[in-house]
Image (cartoon, rainbow, N blue to C red):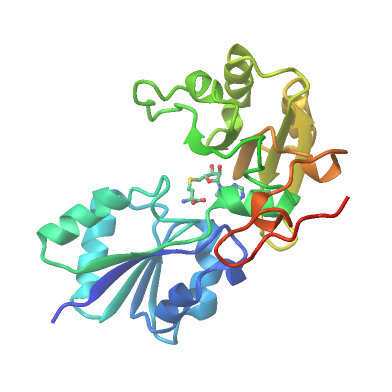
Length: 262
Ligand code: SAH
């Protein structure tokens, strides 16, 4: 019986941010193929003695699939360990299709994505009542073209929270797109490099006008999340619309309203 291949989200960098399910699988793994430097710690920390561990950074997709198939012929549990969540910019389907074609079972274990880790690091929220209730996870084109209707300017026109992956080297394009969509020069922008990495995380707060200069000052050129959101800085606002869920005057399934007396 061939083994099963698990696509496991390692989380954003802190080895403690992998899920319990992901960690348990690592502890039983016969072989682990991990994606670059971001997740090697999780792999080596939790893998059992004798586990076959391989970095995929110099492999093509075909080589990775061949490696996974070969390991699955020898081990019950084979893991492809990826940063954040495997379903976000992770070439997941390109890898699973040949496995299905070869008759190999596979499954996905989700992970904490770097967008969530970046906002957590900065003590910021992705949504806020009556400010924005929508989050867009996206990127700029780079070498992978954006499908029609998904260019950043069009997405930014929603004025919701934008978490922009894979784009720190194209920060000027992000600035141009936000400007073209009508974001103000003083709109707050957050950049977090290596969110959750113990001792290596960098948080840069700026505005649409100055974020690029600030990132250059901090020498941030890779592994960074750009967040543009009308929620940024809300911890320090003077007024805030309350969340209905915890509002004393709001009844819901688990709690009856207790009207506030004047
Ligand atoms: N699957 C991953 C994303 C992979 S694409 C996830 O869910 O997070 C790689 C991009 O993710 C990087 O260019 C960067 O924008 C972002 N990224 C990954 N880890 C990060 C971290 N620890 N801090 C900030 N951004 C990170």
